Image (cartoon, rainbow, N blue to C red):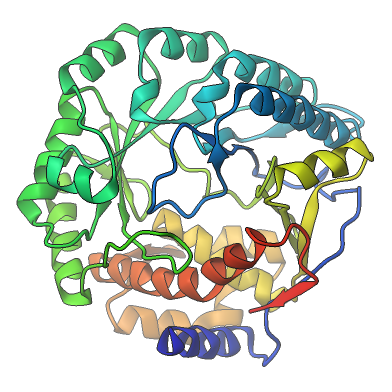
Length: 420
């Protein structure tokens, strides 16, 4: 952890040209500056699960219908509170529901979407994460009726060996395929975890083939990350093995005709997409949800009880806020834009009002020389090598920043502040 922290700190100081850390403060306002933002997305967090997976780092609690219903009531109040500040409906790209297992609130999803539709016009669809147990015809049809267009199923692995490691139950693949065939969605994404102990190319290839055979048109292969505060005893794969596995499985997906639409996601067709991360700006609603604005990043409290109290008092449930310097915001922009595997220099200049090469010309030159990026007409694209090292640094970033922040916030509803 000391080595990881050191690498992250040196990189941050170099790219921001400053010794100033990322400083999150315990302050909030009830006005969010999002009215004039382009490429704005929405995210809703529903933190309830029937059981808690020991490898999952996200904000979640055991499901209780009464508590879930109460939480949704206050979630809708939060959306109304933010949306009512608009003078007219605001166009947004997308809406994603995460958790937890959001489908445990299927009977309330339409109410949430109807509330959002009072204030926002969604242009690129609505997505929701599903636990495999939620993939039944009744639930799928209810989500379809609520205008959900994309589903992401957290399978993690079809292999019994890895299901046991991750604490997951065996799956009836024929039943999953049958249910998915009866209710059609624009995107059916299957989440898989790679870099598990002793996982081979054959193991992961079989998982991908199974996902495609049951009706997936979108595959997400996320690396296993050993967060310090989870109860998982699973150890992540070593760097050399991980790189070989990622390269081999990426080439296999390309051979099958899939297109890469982010670092970890591949689709059988161009319009199949699922990512709540590749937006320039976004508003987050619910416990632990984050909001990214032009020059601020905010994160809501992880505590359901304190979340409800804040909303009851007509206040936003913001726990921590960082006011970015311009360089810090640029790094955040570049890091998450690269998640899509491309950076358009014109988009950067439009967002910040300054040419990309003027700010990071040396770094881009070096990245091309090292074989991480290629450039054509001002668009920088990741190579296979670049994609792996993005992952490798993302692991540093996650353990240096997200791990530390979430570890504090799951124990304190409103920390005094955090420096990273």
